[in-house]
Image (cartoon, rainbow, N blue to C red; front, side, top):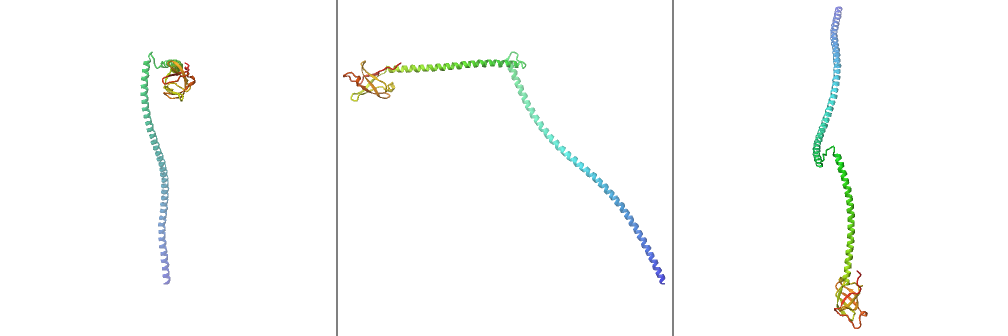
Length: 270
């Protein structure tokens, strides 16, 4: 009985072992399949990852290239804008230059008309070709006229100097003549005695410095055309003179009286 039981146990154990072995084998096969599938999936994922990495690298390279091209395009656009601004400035400058040239052309045309008018006024068939010769002729004529003007200026200067000299000589002669006439008038000057002080020996004459009397003047006293004595001025005023009586010049018994006349004792040289 024990053997049967033991055999049964062995059989059961062997069956269980076989069962577990089979089950384990099945599970192992499944795991192996899963492992192989995982390996395949892993390889596919890795291949995909490598492909994606390569693709990503290409895309990064393409992106970098695109960014470079974009930077270049941006720089080109900026350069084109700058060039466009420069061109606009150049166009504006050209417009200004053209306007200035138009004004210059208008001025030149005006000047040309004036030149043509001058050529017509010059006469003699003067043209732009013969104008230099005409200008030279005018310059020569101008030089000749300038030389003539210098000669005339020199002559005028000499004449003015001579005239000035003559005027100075005339002034000198006129002054001399006036002085001579003054001396002549003084030589013929006579004045009346207005008062006499016999005690103090002086008298007063009704003429003074305005009549040419000076302290150095010696006067003679006349009465009825006859010399009766001499007096010397001691104080001369503009309209009267106080003179001392020279008693030594008087005749015995003669006294100077108011109303007697005085005149210069020594005439002035003419």
